[in-house]
Length: 595
Image (cartoon, rainbow, N blue to C red; front, top):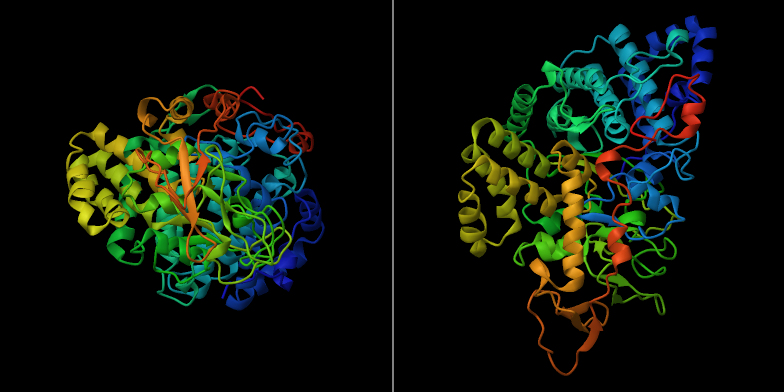
């Protein structure tokens, strides 16, 4: 059963209506606050209530729930907002690299930026209290809670850094001197997070080694080590600094040091046996939609949402035109984003990830409560990883479905291990990790060619790296992980331009897409609900005969292609800080990057 994070007396104590309100309160009641902390953080039950409060900002209305998770990550070379063409839609601006500081969806005082800092402030209070009063040692309940607090704070900072670049650093609760802060060089923050996660990894158990780590909604050692590896790669990777796109010049964040750290952390997770790939890619995503939360499998940690919060399916699921047999969530749910139509045709036809990831149909209007699948359009595909029809409960909230956000899964551990092993030791060391992913993607009969011959043929570091970039696409399309990876590889601009050119070729049935059919044929299965489709695969151009209905599959326009991005993505790797926060910063904050 899903955990439901509720406000407790402790969480309310740590609630912040705003940073200034909290600072005023702490300055006028310091002795009472100190007494409260000594009671709360010396008692494991009370301290857990406080640590649970760190997670509450994830689910607030304009925070991760309906803003950051919905819009950060689109558009890339594999994912786009299905309404990117709209020039009067601030949602589109967030995706097409043309965001303004006054964006109406984001420029509110309770937006994700504020909620992240609220979560950080709560974490800072817990970390201070646990250190001062909890005697947090490895293997103890209070030690676990310190490790969880350090990790949750790192998550908030990691997302601030990937979304905005340099941001103010707060690693202690607010006081009069720190009420208004300028931006801090991100290198300083990355180093602190990497240090914190090293400490957290010593404090929290492996998945299923304790009651707390039996659920993917709680922090565990495998996730902490994976997050540390991810941040090490981001810190040493290419990114847009105010002066240029470059790697960090801090010697502590060099490629050699950070890749060695990341490789060690990934190998620790792999050798621990505490997590594993689901045998079937489709089964993994079915279990995700069914909200299976047992730790020790592929999902390492998920942002927890109660059944009435969170919009992963509302935003990204296969579109449902109306209420139907699968949900009562309202009209036109899901389908705001989708894979670029080229992605389906870039997969190997035998790759089992293809049909799970890329869905060409939606669910039509229900008749007597029952909806049928309907073909959509070539330029409007849907992410099949998210499906109301795979859920085990009927969603009834107006907007929210309550399905968690998978923040990291074991597949990423394998790809990071492959990337870092290739860089430091060469392609032979990287090959076993890549083979594990591809073994899961292909049937046993196809593995000699699609896995063994393919991977063994990657004999240079560059060839292996290129294969890892491609594998990342095939594995993670629809999970909004691609953008940060492309940035740190210094491939964002190049891959986005390549995507536009590929879309143009698909439109013209030229180049790599010359053999993609322009006509589909369909009929309904025996259930009279699900479609049987002919013509999706390359070369399927022969009319299958009677009993099939033809469907035009050529619609993709230049305006849609050009809406993938409006400005050079390399000049807009980050969102601007929203104007409301600039205006309330007492002159300390400003936007860079030409905003």
